Image (cartoon, rainbow, N blue to C red):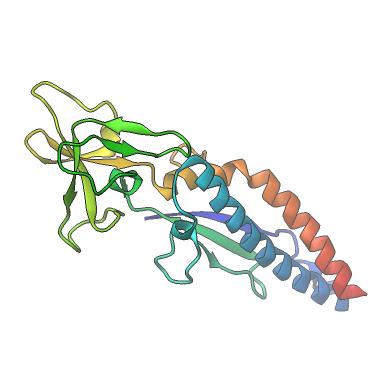
Length: 211
């Protein structure tokens, strides 16, 4: 499952009648789109990190299909569109644990939002069978909690039942921060900024090509 954010130039389909200038416009559009997509991927990664306590390496573009945040389509020729894609596996809360080596029964310290630490008194880390889960974990660990009789978890979208009164807990994923189901998220918040950068970059590239 993935969410895409597109960087697009529209309205250039009738340029053929303008001869040589049409080629320069096309080239400028391709260069501007790809530069803007590359720069905005970095910008979006930093904004996500300002909301979720993830290391820079976690959102670094690796060039593979498994990149969590990547430019997955570049503009070329007659396709004046680039795509930034956030791939979303549920993110185990285990990834946000700051004291993973403590003994069982010691409260776990979590940092989901940068600079804010919370304590989970009865949660514990468990080893998940390798290859048996679609969860994005750290060291193949999950964070579980055993509820008392009648006790409930408030946010049911961030838990999966393992056994009677035993649940795996999840935190926000990269995909949710990037572009959520309600149409919000970092991608939506930076859309005007992306357009402004695209326009400026197009003008710069066009001026360079026609000199």
